[in-house]
Image (cartoon, helix red, strand yellow):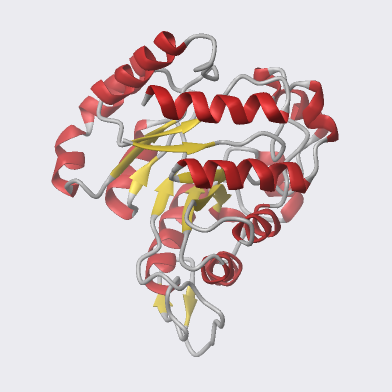
Length: 287
């Protein structure tokens, strides 16, 4: 299994009662955590993204979302090998070539370490604020995924689809990797089907093992047909505490592995930057 992080600071999720130190944390604190994770062998870090959260849902979804392009670019300069995963880009907010330019630049700046996490989106107020259509967002997302696969690593991309149609433009810089891994977010069977058909992995949120199992079982033949390169990356919820409860952490890892997880996007309980780094070290010891 691959082990990555949903780090502190970049998104203060209200469900996990963010500790006080995060409210004063800086980019240098985040860079220190990323460098420590890099040295310990963690595989990836996830950086969430929203443009603007409506006030009426901010207490549920969280008020703080650091811009992923700026943040990932800074972290790329302070790390050497850990992959950088945006989790997620809401496809309907952007033209595919905007995504190719912004995240292709991150891939090139990082030496080819981008994982592109994408989703259809569910926050209708944000779609409306941005002037983007909401009702047909699923079909648009599928077309965008096809466009991205045709374009991410191309200097002169071309795509002719239902919603996106372009040719004769230069995107420079563009992604360094010949094949940028694309993971689909979401929490439904439809998102898994989309991942199997159009992407390289599925990374849902807020689903426990018992909720994952029936969805995975339904699509098991299609998953197996994709072969060992298809990723199933799950976020244990609530956060793990490998320092004080290593047995519980081992049990939860085993449960995810039993349903077919190829990776975990981890959160840890923590009370300070130093405590978080000790959790990073403790987790490495138990796995």
